[in-house]
Length: 473
Image (tube, rainbow, N blue to C red; front, side):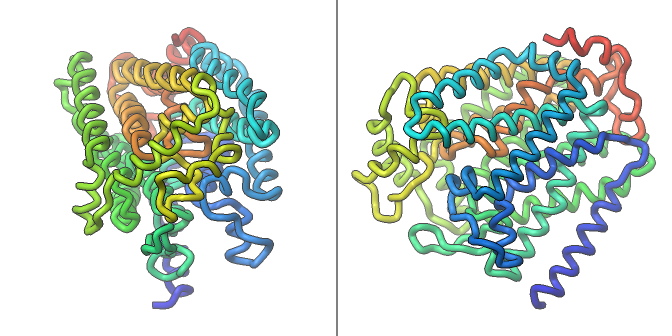
């Protein structure tokens, strides 16, 4: 089958998934399309790259994360327009927005510190532009959290993002050279809608966790008239997620999906729902298992099961090379500035394939290079805050809390071998969502201890929860 017949099947199939997933009993606001479009871009390629590929307009954006962060003037305009639109929506919802921000002290302090760090960046204008994009990350997650029906909004975000990106990745991998590339060592890799296998694995595992969560929720309820159709759509989306993860061969993403899925499914049992201490034990166990596994070669084991033979040796060489070059151990090089100002000095002890890096392949070291030990302290505060808020959400609504716990845990583990705390990164986006919105999403989806509703049941928002919105702490 050629590309265009396959593209036609993709278009028909995607339209079918949207049709199956529709639910007229639930009304989320149209502003929800803003975070959907944001995630489409974050999870694929910049607008300039897509225009260059399909229409030959301008030069495609370069490969790598720095190219995606900087992009072109066209990309800057698109991100700025989406950010401005999201801020306008949040201004209209200012009471709900302020209530969430007032209880998100650690996150706000982190944003203040990163803004100040632009002052000592070797390229303060570039650092400030990237900080604005990070504000966009926060704004998009607040749009989801402040929707009148945040649980339904979250489900729709996963569906709308996944229905486009995951089938399109399969299409491009199988029927177009656009979805395939070569790594720095010359080996082939599947990239799908992205420019790198790790980026493809990252967006896939985050969306696949959301699809699994949605499917399990539908299995537990029988009150929605569109339940069967939605179950088919979410099951297909989950199947696409598993297939793309296999095609991407991103061992870290596969390991994080397995651990996150286990956490979501395990916390469905009553032993965890009614015993908070057991939830803490489970999460700590997963973090220890995942962390120790990644630190001591577990990623290689996963990759070997996929028919590949990587190791952490190259990463450890990178870590040894970059840490001594940090210009200021206390405050770092400035927000998202290390690789622009000092990355060119990272050559000693590295092979020719590892030079020209734009990532330390470790989220914690990446934060250290850009923001120093002060930044590491803030990241620790954010992870603790996200975990605590997710636990509170779990006590109010185990369904929502389990998903937020999974995202906090996987962000912690993913960042051991990949830069998971950088802007425009799905792990960072959903960690921010857990910090600012986990408890209020759970509160709006709860009904005095009853099971959270799906479909038509989500249309009625708990009046008491709305009254308590400003009291969430």
